[in-house]
Length: 311
Image (tube, rainbow, N blue to C red; front, side, top):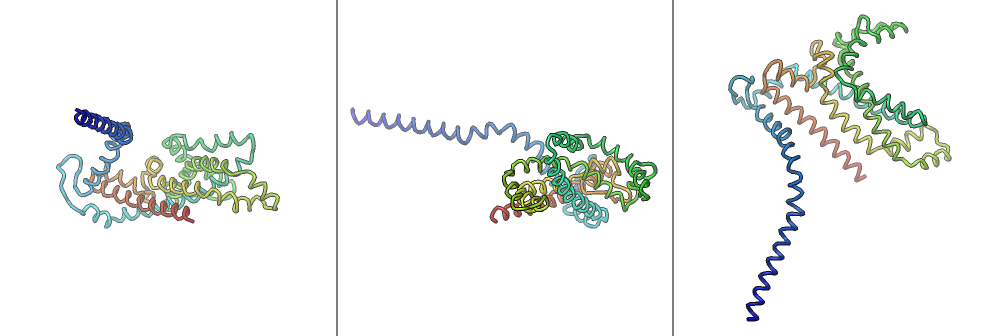
């Protein structure tokens, strides 16, 4: 009798333990994934599936109407033989090199200057950030008028000081740099806000101690501000490069990739291949190449961040 009672008690205890384990597993493992399920489903539908489908299409010939035809690496080979492709890569990297360092330097200098203005700093923060939240389509139309080679305000101002302005958007030598100017104007405000946030995290006593030691404004900037903003610099660098690789709307409104493909970049060529030439296979192959370029840049920057942390 006692043995049977003991066996029953052991069985009950085992059931209780297993029930507790199931509850603990559900609470620690299953429940979080259940809560994340809606977001994961949406992410899969709008990001993972389109990426995988685009990868699949990069090996196909398809014009959205006829049946798909498997062509292997022909889309990639045709792109590598296309001079427009290499021109768009060159333009993309020139745009990145023209906008990223410039916006970082100007945004940092503006942040340092504005933070020293006291009460007026809030007003200037608002004015500098306006281009970021303004519609790109609207601002691009305005810039087309400003950069008009015949009667644009920019050339009129240059004429006042005796300089003959170029045909900014119709001259292949100047068209891309016109887009770079607009890109700089558009993105400075975002980087500016990030730098302002970083400056507020620097202890003011460090500047006071440096002033006592006789450090001027330039030494404070180069020996204190810039080194202490290293995490912000790396973040701004990553975000700026990725954003620059994705430039499209400004070019679509202002130049449509011209003149003579002088402003054609990778993203705009993807649009052309897909929705002007209806070559979905080449467009998908081009998007995969763009993805690899951005991935390589991102990995390089992550390695740089890790090396900084170890240092």
